Amino acid sequence: MIRLVLRCVCFVIVMCVVLFVVPNVRHMMSVRRYNLASHRINQKLWALEARRPETISPELWDASASWASISFCNICFSESHVPYEEMLRFERELDGKLAGSIDLDFFEWIWARLATVSPHGSRYVTRFKPNWDEQVQLDVERRQKATQQRQENHD
Image 1 (tube, rainbow, N blue to C red):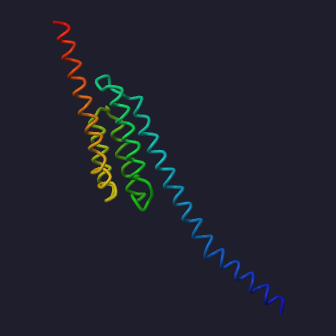
Image 2 (cartoon, rainbow, N blue to C red):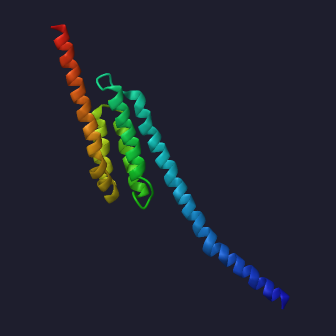
Image 3 (cartoon, helix red, strand yellow):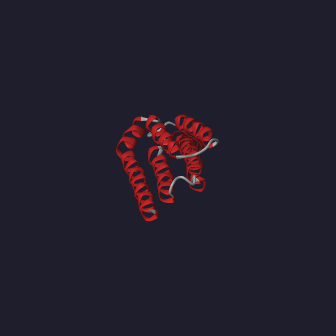
């Protein structure tokens, strides 16, 4: 009788492990895989800071790189926001773009591409891209004003 009870207890323990632990481990592995890929992509975006063209002010370049990184992290937050395969597709396209020259059009591409990764991405870009657009416009105006002042001082 005791052996039967022990077998039943062992069976219940094994079933609990199979039913509760195994699915959680799978989920944790999936989350870990997503986070590793997200981190890898975000490192590529942060590396843009070192690739500033001379024609773009350091302030605008830093703001643009920051917006790219922050936007990516806020959009590709989890697989429920952006599917893993779509995030990897974004990375492949990003790698192709990074192989070429980088300028402000590159950041326009990032915004446009992030808007297509999911409905969440589209909503995020609609809400926050105008902030970056404003920073670009302010930088253009500041540079134009500085150029005018130099010309006036030169005359």
